[in-house]
Length: 383
Image (tube, rainbow, N blue to C red):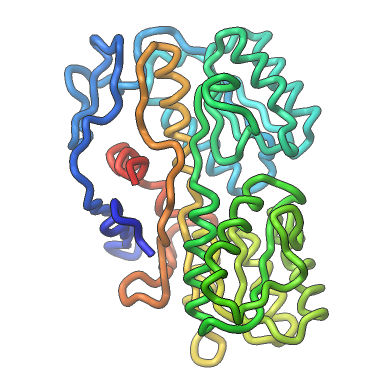
């Protein structure tokens, strides 16, 4: 499952209260980001240490007013994403002011928030444009036309780089969908009924994941995807644990046989699991994104109640890459880091030593990949 540039990615606890993060990437040292005007910015070398100064290579010297926008902003994933963006921004002394806006999946609120940022004089924006399908695009174009460097991430803005915005950093949705589906199909023994659950109706993240799922399932003709899932339609969870439990309960009443679950949001998977348990149904193999509370619940289940589980990173850390893209662009620094990243499985119960781990000393929403160092984030972007 792990791509050729990722030899291994392991995050393990050294003691009950201390987490040690280690990542070994079998990748050759690359020249890394380049700059046409990088004098004095402190280039990052292959080992991740800053050369010449403590200022990150992407920071530059121009004063930055940074807009941080999220079309959603309602759940724990959004909170973790905001924290990652702020963490990266704090490394750059040139960022003098931050303006934060979240829209709660309300397109008009998203547009108003962006317009307010533009009026307040931001010169860089980092945004998850997921308030509604393509809703933010006209305002993103407006910002770009005014010379503001806009870095989108974690959801497609529906535009074109660099005409409509500076960059779009994300997991490769199709590749991730294929990776998840291939693992699930293997655990299902290549046959049976697969249940796919997704976020808000029509969102572009699930569109790509579903496309990748069906690409992988071409090799598994004896697997049936339940409920007429297409790249435009799927059982909706709205990325809400409560809604996921409700939706799954309805599907359990509808289908007497479910052999695998693909729900690429860990907090949803908690709801899925609860619905199965309430219905007294055996939980089938499940693939999702990493969530500590899910891993801890999984670790408790023994014997007949145990089920195969795999996950990928929540990718909140990609917000750090988006900050680099926006700020470096303001300074004329060419950031060549990867923007479409084919994430491998992060944890996999089918592989000895890679099973989902419960970090008992951490919170329920803890994701070990969010503890990656700057060097590890840079290496992951190369993968």
